[in-house]
Length: 292
Image (tube, rainbow, N blue to C red; front, side, top):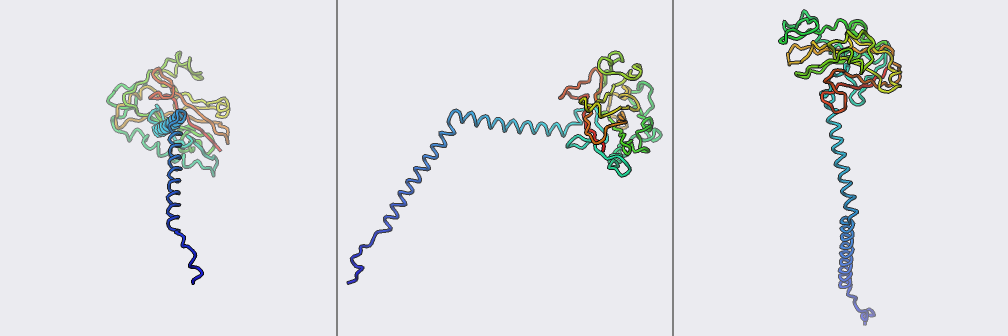
């Protein structure tokens, strides 16, 4: 007789099946408990408020970022003036190294190209006229003469960039139909300190550039304006004439401290110009200047 014949076969398969059933049941119970716990956590009154706050923060962040990006991309279109050479968009910075081997040539090349349309009067159309104090013919546009810029702010002297005395040019944006309401010299003195003869500021959108903080005001040094201290009213309004020449003001920084970023804000002054953030059009513009 086989010695193993008395050994009873163990129904392993049946036990395994029972174990699987028990395991599945246990797993189902655990899963059900976990789901129930998650639902209780999510539906708790405090948790609802927390989730609502998180969602609100995310939505607010998206809205703020989108708005800032839109404003950054539309910066020039909301301002009465724009700056040449163009500042670096990321930091709103005009930066260069002065000297014979400096990094200023790209900026002066940009200015050379910018001034091409301001060619000699002899090459303009008959709709461009030399005006006196006012434009007497609204069907024509006033010629803007850049020759007064030639003293210190010209191609011939690299616009001052090679010697660390840069000229920055403010161009008036072409805002159709906009007409300035200038202050009288007496009214203007309530807002700015006039260093020149006040009578010279008649019929002028006055321009004033200053360092933002006390340190910036110390570091920026003396500032000169050419050809005049603002934008004469004879160049307004802009009517979409193809030969219109946007008026310019050259702002020359004669002794800026080197190696220091200087924040400069330029403001235009007229009765119908606002400086508050969000005003459209806006009468001020800010940029950073760094000369090495």
